[in-house]
Length: 303
Length: 246
Image 1: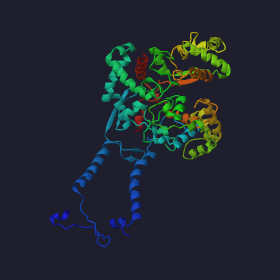
Image 2: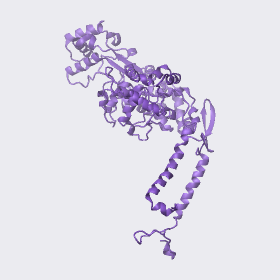
Image 3: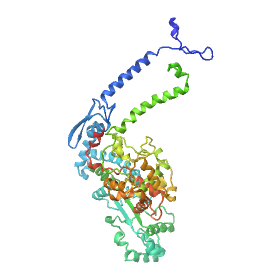
Image 4: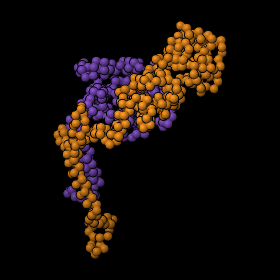
């Protein structure tokens, strides 16, 4: 290498196994200058950013970040938290998004639906919010994995009401769905009768005598089902009581059952065990505008 | 012996020792100051040690290796803030031994999962994730519902944590300090002598796993997950408050 120009190469002076020697060439220049470069970089970095600990504090550096806090402008030494705050308050992406958010926040739900730009923004942002927060239970796009705990949001049946105001309240406050367990109160025979009546309400083939007996329990004090499901069986949104007369099932997997007997069994199980289901409230976790976006999105799913 | 290039190079033992010293300087310079820089841990209300039931749940979380796929650390970045919520504070894991921050996210971050979903969802999801999230690649943990929770050694577990600085109480004085710091109800739950009673009482206070008749490992794990990230009320602080600690 270096002896091309006739210079003799220095060795480190060791010899292993008799004649194995090690060259002692100078460091390649590019490497050496890169190394000095990193040293200079480090010194500049220390000057700009928080770096060296001193007693119970540290050098803060000359870099600064400004943000709003408690209604006034604050300027502090550079740090990731301040920078995030600045980005969330006045970053270029934030400002673009905020222009839309403010427009949506000020608009009525009708205006949002009728304005193509606002409704496109609402759909795309709410879709992400839904995926981050709601999809774990309601499924991506609003269809849950199976009939069970979590209502499908893509149909137009609403346990707690499908008006904008009702949906907004559901998202804000959450819901506690409750139906008592009738297993010990009624016993197997009567549960079968009530289940027959309930299935009959939505037009399924049932034993007419059992359904008639079930009707008496449903509509009378013994079962008291009508208190929440109403005498017509159409349900009461204020109680989160399901409409039993349509083809939509949210707990008993009636559509998935193959035979009449299986359908009966599925409904019986719900009457026997009752229902307890909870949707958490999102008020603290999501902003008012985010809830508004979700409300508009969920409302649009169900039609 | 003169400490020359050659003597280090031909003496493996010496080289190992000197290498360790050189490398640990880097680590020590980064880590040690955090113990005495006064802004490291934010001054914030609400953070408390885990109750006995939550602590048992946390032990199960670690036993099952949840940390290999889930982090518990929301970093101060825009995308994380929008997806998970407020970035994690050092203060929020001050009673975690060991902490569960992590950096591997096969699954989502769990630092603020508390009360985001219902108890029933957690029980269903841990039992068979695909029952609720068809796209999930998380394994099933069906034994959590089957296994009775073993909490015979909960007092010893709390004593061990007390040794590393978690303020569980063992005498009247410590208990009264906890009453001042965390309120009477919580102080009672943090009392080691009442640990088993508190654990059972909390397990019965809510339907954690969908079956109130048994105390299972699922009860404990769900109770733990439901408290994650819920101790600090961020509504109480100005937006910029936590930036003042950096």
